[in-house]
Image (cartoon, rainbow, N blue to C red):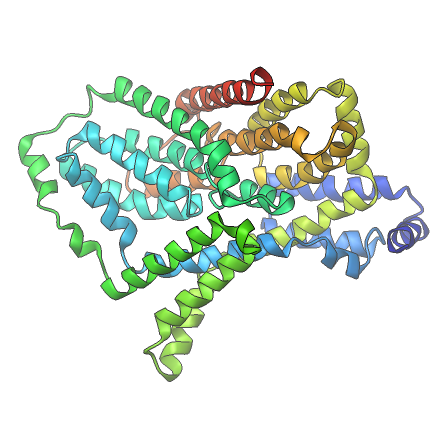
Length: 451
């Protein structure tokens, strides 16, 4: 009844087909978001407001369209990462890893790629590169080698590693929350693909750069003299952070058995770590520390998601996404195999050029609308994994394909190491194509060939 009332209101106010109105709102909002001329959170919220003001949605419907589990997961993990970062854990691991390979430049390439990919599976990609890149410059300067290949492989590793888990990349968070998937669902189906892609990436970089990755014994000794323990800024906080992280990850793994949503786990972990972080503080010092951590939450991203959920829900309520789903079924002749590969490659190519978050947010309800006609959720799972792999791997396609790419380029420029757009394509396009090809092979053997 509410949907009918909303659609009736839209016709009354606009004198236009509600489907057309919702398409216009989404198209204008997405075009402005993709131009990056205006803050994306502002545009998403204005688009959400337009859905309500035109009568497409009521305010109650708009609130119902917001996925609070996703928001809770994002906010909780942002708080946990913000506090853990203050312990110095991530810098410690990078320096420790460099010393484990005896400061060999080629070994360092492998270590930094592996560390970046691993951290990206549990942190957001931007945070990972913000932590790893400064250490990279510090070590490569001591070794007197070019930081360029290390920066490139860190970009690619951050996007590949983020694909491996539920919490590694926003598209996975969106998909996992919408389908009620567990942490282990992503590990089982996506981590093997990421591992193979990472191995190929490291092998390729080692082959093409090994002649330039040489240094002197004196330079290597300067790195070996670095004390990784000095990276630990707060040992007590490190222990507390590792304790909470362990609880959160274990809870993610057993979330289904515990009957808990991922958002609840993340926010509970964040609250517990905040308690540990401020327990011995008094008065204004405690309040200041809590405010500081809350200020480190990326509220721009949070409000961007809020607006985006409402915009996409407008398309869903008016039936636009169901109509697109029917067209897609007709295009692929109802074949799950065709859908899988089409979604995989189109997602990768589009995500190379545009923000993959609004793309995935729009695709989720569209794919959901097809499930009943195709045979249910289980039959459609390869399509869902294809969406995740394509959207995440596509971030490696261009310098603007993912936020981490842009951040690393900016940090590199400030350190006198410029990463040019066209030069980056010489590496990014092959890396993206090979990783998507690896995903294609995995999906074929897991579903098509096995079936």
